[in-house]
Length: 302
Image (cartoon, rainbow, N blue to C red; front, side):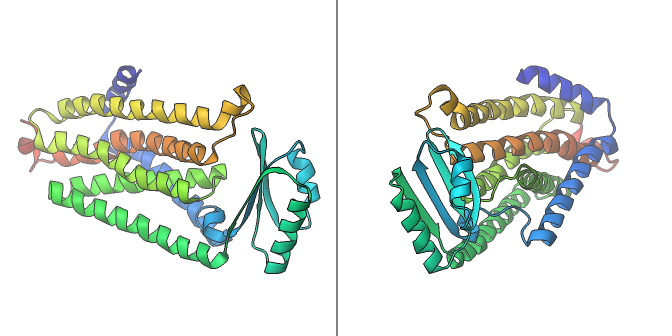
């Protein structure tokens, strides 16, 4: 599968100009930025914030009542989500004052549900986590950019790697917004991991083109076959993790849906598909244009 995909991409890259290769990834990046901007203007956040970052209460319990019944039963509280995960039901509530919070806990306890779990995050703590999440993303991205510039010490190839990584993050974040996936500590970890995954294939490509011998076309082709194999191997593992964590309860009812792993895997899957496009179209187009400039043609085609 990886070999076949690499051959298709290789043929596509060779048969299109640099400008044509850049068109699709740049258009998708522009659409993703527009989605995030509209979301920020309308809701104050580019992505939907989960309970970890905005505060609230999550109640997990075992019951024979359906989510619809529970939604009606607790409609007097700021109920934001009710979902079934195997034999358990998870209810998520927005921010409440102390009196309403105590009343909710009293109402839930009075029904004597099995395996009852209540988790609460205060709004102040959520705001603090928002700031820390933004700092973590910025520091990780800046650190990556510094390492890339130190590694290649050439502006355009380094800029291409950073642009590709930036596009991966923005496309994954826009996918989260469109798919309704909340930003939680788990999905934040997925976005941070995506920086490493995306830079890996970009550095492979740039290193081959800038530092190896051969024609640019040959070096891109060899890098593509290696990079596609790496990415598809990772994708296969992530798809397996997503299927098991999301749908295993359909086969074995006693299992519960592992929401954290499900969200991490689907965000990484979306990000890695974006990375294949950005690495082998966007980054390749920029590198090929740079290496084929008259002043560099003899240096990178030898």
